[in-house]
Image 1 (cartoon, one colour):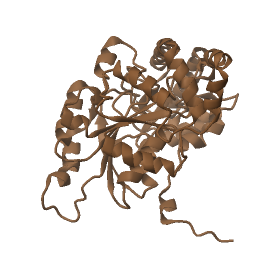
Image 2: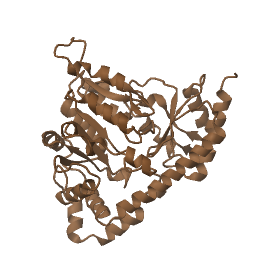
Image 3: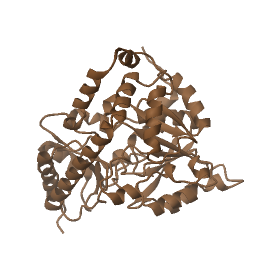
Image 4: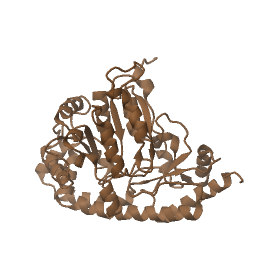
Length: 411
């Protein structure tokens, strides 16, 4: 039978990171590809303890359908946790989603018509791009530098939103999608000055800003904590309502729980809730019960403290190995949190050739083209330190470094 698929299927973009998972899980491969916690870091004992102490009523709640927007007791606990971080939970509504990608998908479904423009960073998280492309969006990338999004480029991109009479060739963007904290893949954190300029640039455009903050709790020092305060927590009342904030438990508890949230104005919440009813009826109640207990007991905050230190140590170990084995022409922004190093290749090195050579030698990373809005080669690679033990980091970085030196043109 010949199946006739919808037009939107032609817009789907497979995640190369998902495709790399078969390599990443091979025992003979040192993987710097996956943006995930190491298995040894997952809170297994904490989850086992929670399970042993659940009452019959709590087990019944965990195994039953729940409310579309999330279990009320879990939402109340999450609101308390967010309040301590200065989030405006009283002026917004909190909806629980089955992972942050579902939140991005629902927002995309609410706002995007075919050929609508969505502004993203360049580079950009592939999951966000894939979600928006599934609704036939036109993705327009705005470059990043070491302090965040390029304000001059952003100003040009939002001009149609300010013009009363603009050319049909100028399409008003529907959304701006950004990841200001410990960016995936760029590893950087937006400076406070850049955040302020971004908000002023977006003021009056009526373009919703999606602030994706999956890594926001994974800061490595007090300075990065101050710099990484989400815009949703300090923007003025006008701009705060323009921000659709998305958070996740995947990096601070467990990716397998498939649990995230969106903090959004009520008007957006109402539409998201109706939309979610047609997707999966409710987020996983099992995960919500366990997450609520994890938070109530204080174990989640303790766990975050522990993994911050481990990720910081792994970053430091990787930086030392890169300094030892990489040619000096390979450059990057030192990450102040999160999971990633975004490395610019020395001139004359083809990252695809490097990739094949490194895999042959027993390591793997992600090609920079994966994170380009149009999937173009850009001379970068992403290296993750989050799920690679220290004893493997040096060995894997040496493999990449040796291959870089072998491929580097003679000067």
